[in-house]
Image (cartoon, rainbow, N blue to C red; front, side):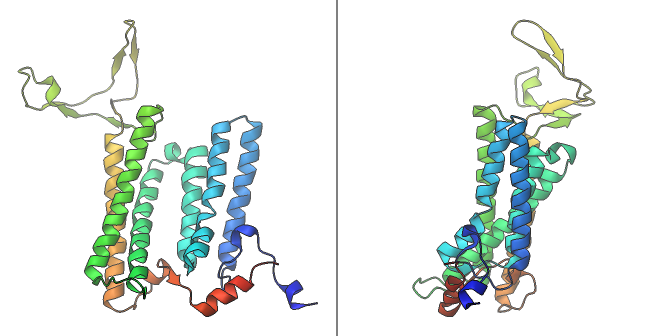
Length: 284
């Protein structure tokens, strides 16, 4: 048997990648992709076309790591790549289709915390790659690298909240999940029409009065806050995740790479030899 015949055949989405020590990544990728395909078929028979689109979107997002590695000539650490795949699956398949956002109240909080951490890692990696690039005159100190990573993560978090707000208002979705409150404080109830905040405590129910005069009790056990608390909570945990990795990245650079955590989330540039090996792993 020739050497060409003995080479493992990789799917197109995995071609051209650095295949060293990627067995676990490939296994998780195939398991998750198979699960999404099964879910897609089930949603087709249930005629739930919106969920079918979510499945297709998930399959497309699964291709991002390999596309980034090929385009940027980098090697994503296994830990980072696995977390990205699991994050996509947890958000789209488990969160939306399997309703984990409703079943588990802190599911969304967990994902936004992870998002803050991952986006800070990506922002830090981008600056780190530019710092080490021969053709780019950029040499930021560890402190400013941490600041850039933090700002990158928070910017992504804010843009996502803008997207959720737009979808809820334009398409009447509920991406900003509502919160039930027993206490509110508002200046709109000031009898003098001033700026004094009037607090109302012990709210048990809200009654809607529609244009035709009909009334509807929500029976939710409190006042219905439409998204503000969810948005602020998401940004706060994004802040925590961003601070966490920015701190890790700072000490990683400060101690000249002596860290057991940061390298698992920071991509590295492939040298010419590694790129050659990677290109030879492509099936003919």
